[in-house]
Image: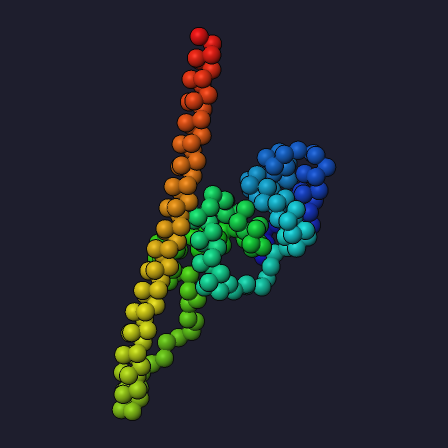
Length: 192
């Protein structure tokens, strides 16, 4: 069960919109754990309306490519988890944080869907099954190797995009500092 009801969240947001106080004041007044929660509610309400405040009982499943896309966006830009969640229409910014952390720890494989259920036990009495299973294992290892290489390539591409963006930002910063130095030396020369 959700800790805060839809009606409660709506009441807090309406108080914020009426100008009764800031995030911290409203969090304290209404007994919300911290001001960040109120801030999230306001942002989600502004972006999605009433739907942004409702707790979804439905587990959305996201594809591997979509998760990878979101992680790549986060790593190659300087946006917060919340801003990215709002842009992508994801109602839970901690989900993006989990994807990014999993990606950093275990690479792209961590974002792949996990198989559910119990593993099948092998029946050793049937030799025909053993032969087909060993053939399948040989195929799977080569397919598995290709998947590993594709994942490694993808990880390197994301890392490359991140480093390029970082370099671009540093160059912008250096150009800005250079302009500031030039303007300050020009003003010193004109005053002399």
